Length: 162
Image (tube, rainbow, N blue to C red):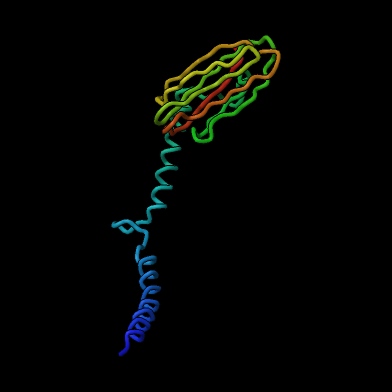
């Protein structure tokens, strides 16, 4: 056999076998852990269960107001990943109290901005409650709460008239 034929035969054999090897390597992993359960389902269940637990902890810590509470201006519960971005409209000159808590891991940062400037407060995600009293400005105010690096959890917040 000539050298040319051997090279051509080797090249053809390699071209025929390579796709089969690639297909086997791409499809050989079933994507399930050793115990046979799909990882994505259990991860989703764990995250959803954890989120519900953290939400309950945050609501309990902040003493979530009843829906018919006439002193409540604004409030809610958000995931730390989504954060809070609110522009509450309050009665000028009226006194209010802002309460914020975070349940989870790490810290959150709250920035409360009025025409007088911005107040920044770090909130540990250990369900401790941070309270701030303020008098409503003539113009709008803004509340932004976001998670700091590597933080996760739930934020509960509310603004009540004092």
